[in-house]
Amino acid sequence: MILPTGPHDYAIPDLSVVEADIRDAHVMKNCYAPHVFRMVLEVTSTNWADDLGPKVEGYAQAGIPVYVVADRKHDQVLVCTDPRGGEYRTRTPHKRGMSFTVPDVVGVEMELSVDRLLNGDED
Image 1 (tube, rainbow, N blue to C red):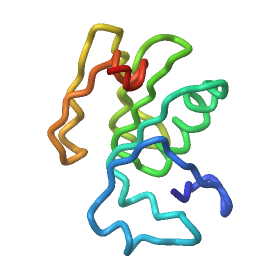
Image 2 (tube, rainbow, N blue to C red; image 1 turned 90 degrees about the vertical axis):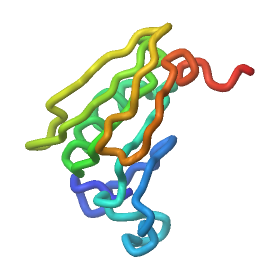
Image 3 (cartoon, rainbow, N blue to C red; image 1 turned 45 degrees about the horizontal axis):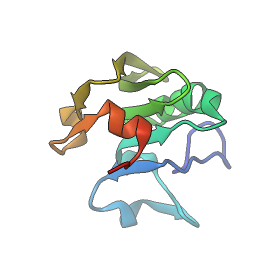
């Protein structure tokens, strides 16, 4: 996804929910315009500060409606919504043992388990 923070800034989300016409938003190589992204999900690793800092700002500036961070460093899932003025107005943390419903703006009905996002598929 192309980010508005510079001509060569882009992000490769761990998971994304996109509009059906994403192919029409192709910009270059494997990069697409941000307006077709409805939700982006990142799972933290050793670069957890990027997922909780610059990526939050970049996705908000790009107007991505929902940004979800499976924050393994702090053992929670953070759901960021309502991007305005280059920041997410709402940041809701979810602890282990909880589930949350993906916000309606994404356009899908889905409930996600915090434990499943933090642990991966251990079945």
